[in-house]
Image (cartoon, rainbow, N blue to C red; front, top):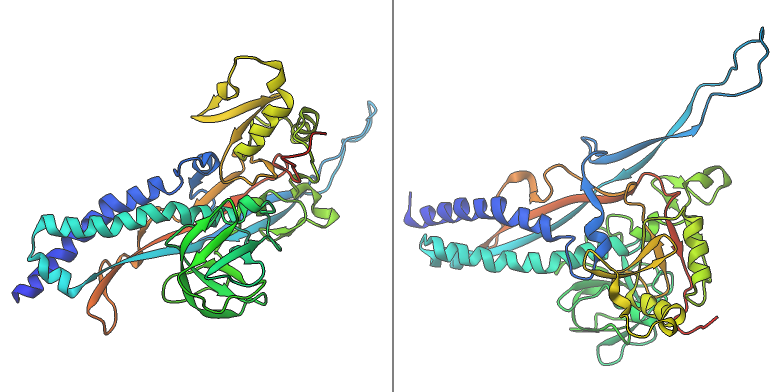
Length: 412
């Protein structure tokens, strides 16, 4: 064996174990632990509903077969029909990333364990820093995976975002899923690819704008979706539904069309045009959601609720006296309203964590096909691919809810 081959083998063996035993568990652990994101960290992750084909099947009853009636002393027992059932279905999406090391870098290690560790640490830290933001986009974009829509013409590489067809109506919510360094693919309003993937260089979340490294051909009503640096692989779908896809009442979710009367039992409680953040409005909404233990909203809604309903009645007590898991909260009736930066400024959502979960392939994040390092065909570098199979799943949405149309300026 040549000295170079021994170095390559040592590098692959040592670094592969580090990534598998240390970094993959770390990636999995921190994926949902981003600061100011209370809800994502609370959604359970498990493989309870996942089949061998990485699909999810949720059986449910569509009707009961028993019947009751009054019966005389010598009468007959009540009769009924068999139970009626059906199945909801979902599929796990694949989410992958790769780190690359050149032949030159591997040779330069000369088999030094400390240098090999340094190379892997540098590469994997990039994944740990960016993965939570990818997970945020995965959880909060619609099933289409669209992060934002362009409004008007691009101006010196700065794009003003619209909300056409999206949930984030407030200006300050429109750029919240973008981060500097993120690569996006631009598509026309008809979802035709426009140019190559482009890097986001700056994000203004107050003005709702993003700045691009170059202009691939942006135009009014173009849409932006996540991509890698090489090109879009799976159209414009982000490989999974978002939280607001689950907490809805008139879409098709997990194969069930909730807009039809026959499927009304699958609907979440959705109320629009809430207006001012008043106690009576929130109290009625939480009552309709069967008095949940907690609900989530943006911190601006909590600030506004305080100003309209509590501030004038207290003199010295700070409004963040209530804290839930380190997050500010306010008690409304019997429900703890908790701040979460991922929530929109015009909504309050009630997620039932007993029925909302992330279903994932057993093992969490792992090396794709367990092949370790692989040379990129015809190129002088190797790559290590990590993959995560997962999808958001809701077993029962009747105790979830969404209050839309909240105004941060209205007083009544």
